[in-house]
Image 1 (spheres, rainbow, N blue to C red):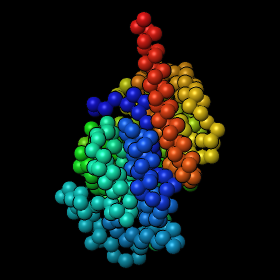
Image 2 (cartoon, rainbow, N blue to C red; image 1 turned 30 degrees about the vertical axis):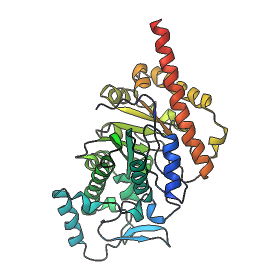
Image 3 (cartoon, rainbow, N blue to C red; image 1 turned 90 degrees about the vertical axis):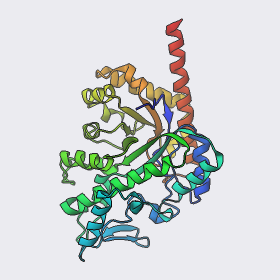
Image 4 (tube, rainbow, N blue to C red; image 1 turned 180 degrees about the vertical axis):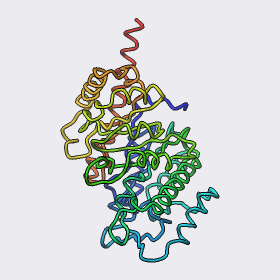
Length: 354
């Protein structure tokens, strides 16, 4: 891995905009090193994170009026399952393409970066992770498809195809040195609870299956409390967490976090709130939160130098739930916190060398 994070600012992905061009303009204006293509669920229900990657799923029904995605398992799905497996075995990534109706921001970003003719250190994409997708999408009996062994296997392969297709799509823009693909996993907060019957090994194996064969950086985002060892074990390059609201949860796993960082892993710190709280935060407040987080983790035995070296900065989660003005403030704060921490680190190094 040649990418060096150095407090690089990026985003989780979703924005409240209904116009893809405006969303891309905002993104490129502030995330000048690692823009993430914008997901726009308010523009069209098909850009909801569960509908967005559902094309090709056997039996899938996308119901915009009812705002739901489900699988019609009341009919024979064997041929559709075999088609997913065929595409997977033949590496037919184009078959699994996400169409523009489902990802207007992805295609708008390609047009915009092609027109401007510059190269970015990183372009970031995102795919819904298998645990969240498999628990949110239900079958005809309202049972999560993750609990059906056959459907779960097909789902993981489909998401893997889409992740690999997206890597190629972003690389083929010619506008980046490297690509980062995130798996978004909000449902990981429920794993281990009485509400969700999913084993730890199934979580790890499903995530590994989704990123298998990718030649780019891979990561995962969870916006709450979870067992972080699940992501540390999954072979990812980046683990993204809500550092604004859930710093203490990461501090419960110091040994595992230390091994992750020692192995080259990167922490994406979600320092910027994705709620109205963003109005009351300034750069110095968020820099202080970062320093407090480093102090906490270092006090538990995590290598402080690695904590400062292997860092990306993001909003705490997606921003579709706030106004366009607040979304822009969040992106601007992420960029400014990135610059402040980078400058602070450079200043500290200069003092040490004096």
